[in-house]
Length: 260
Image (tube, rainbow, N blue to C red; front, side, top):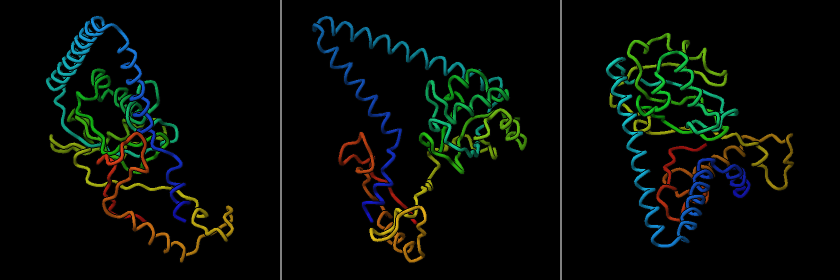
């Protein structure tokens, strides 16, 4: 039964890990190609590339800083949290990504159309201290998710959800808005996350039982499954459930509070 459960759980690897592997491989390919140049040419080009990169990064930082200063002067923003729910089937995850439809992209568009945020804030969400409590991958839904950001103080009111929802697709809804202290950060303040996975019950049928769609799990079997799932509780290394991570990487460890 253990093998059957694990095969169901790892059938769909996390998109975020797959993306990180692809990016890493592309970078490695570029480094190998550049190493074939003559030493003098390589050193010169590397120096110029670093200078251009540094100047570009500084330029972006200056734009963000100026936009944030102008926003603070004109709009007097205050930190707030939004409670969201969404169906993730039509989206490539929660986090904003270039040239794909994401939950955050639709949220930012709705805030801009509602004239709640400025174009500069839409272009650079960092200027409004935007942060999410949890990231979801492609196709994953959320019953509740929190984001924190700075909003004009007069917009933090009971009419906010209706005002924004009229510009959102039906798969995304803002449920509520609440003002919080200035140093609140949705990611840092999140101390636990709850995930729900849909697994067909015939995955828990024994090899001698009918494992078709007509199978119905018994109360006794549910108890057996829950006893097995207790093995996940505590701090465990989930290296075998990830990709693109080295064995022994501390980031593969998770603390499970309950599993049933």
